[in-house]
Image (tube, rainbow over all chains, first blue to last red; front, side, top):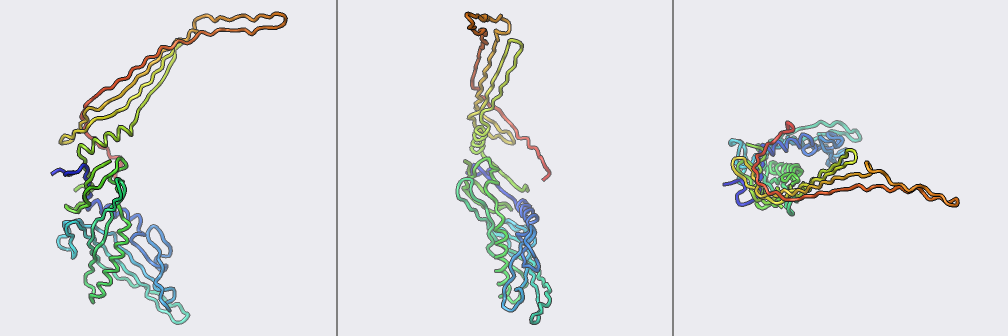
Length: 214
Length: 135
């Protein structure tokens, strides 16, 4: 079977290529995976995004916090973890593995005395399952994005706390990966317009698309 | 495994060929020179159209029936003023009124020559990639 099958154009990107792409983006633009309030991230830089503290009545300055993700590593179907992943990818899906560091500014105060803030950190091993979603609006126009469907964090008790953290990190991971898109112009190098006819599909550790050109 | 794999069939590469011909447009070259009373100039224009791609394993890209349109324009000139004597009517004054001195210049004789034709050709190529950076 030819690569193009019944179509005129084929493009496939392997998981090593995608991981190189994600590593390059997250290394150069760490603000996509590092967030924190003023105590931890005073100002937004290329490496981290400043966020508001969590306002709470009676807590001076609000609750200080930070969330940091290690550079996510994608594993496209089939599973390449050798059984280590609690969420192995199924057909047309990918697995994401990252480590989330959640920091809370543990503050003590007394009346007008602002007291002290001690950072408390928790390191969580995060596994997620997702899919590649095309956003196609016409020949040569659109992009391919990553969508996170579910998250698994091992060893959290009670299970309800685990569900809360999984939902929290699913939202954070979905937002972080939502910044990473591949426009169709990247496939065409400006030489032609890609007409998406099939895909993206995930198989053989690759994201595959088929189409025609105009 | 390669990071990126891209493949195109003969239909797609033929479209790319036609797009490339359109993008290339018409290439022209012109020039001129002179030697004493003699002058010469030329204009050459070339453009491509049509053709289909044949992909042959393992790495041959064949272009079939591609049209090379060319036109050549040549011109030769001879400046007669350079070696023929000038005719000048002398100034004549009559009752204080003078006519201007009138000189007649010889023309430059130009002989143009133009030719245009189409060459239909078929050729086989192989890609020769060059990496211009390490990353």
